[in-house]
Image (cartoon, rainbow, N blue to C red; front, side):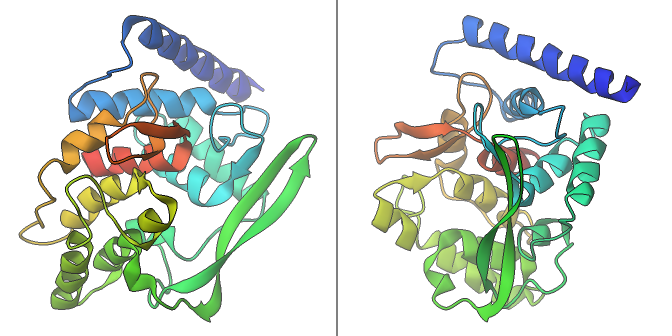
Length: 259
């Protein structure tokens, strides 16, 4: 009970910090990488549902994703908010969801990351009007994954053979059009995905010497942070934000800025 009250105080404090930040900053939020990451973590903490010890997909959402959202949040908050990180991990164990089979490769925790396989979105359980869901990979090999920048970048990280990893990196960089990664998803949806920018920064640092991200990528990523801390889902060719700040995008942006 005492731990629960402690978590509630932390969430309330972060909520107040976010409110003050929204009042004091214009929508053209600009910051250094470290300041942006700190502000992003404050946003994540403010979302914690202390009844479930999980974060909803975005503020006001009724869906809580174990993987990838809460898994990533537990990693991003582990150092600066260890109590919250441990609470999220315990909640994941309570729900009986311990792996997805893909996103864990960012931390060397995926048993069999390659080849990529098709995934399923599964309902874990309902709690009143709230829905806990998760993503899990199946046994079916995913065809055509090389058309997607995020999967090419994840392959860079998962691939142990450095020449092969470099080829995946080069293929991903060829999809950069000066604004974002114009892959099959972006062409279909007529919008760019913000999380792929953060993922590119993570993947580039896995090489020695590191792979150089495209010019303008870092500035673009920083420009897509919402004034209240999280990173928005998508953006258009003019850089206009589309959607709302969400957990997965915010976590991958933070990892890209800091890892």
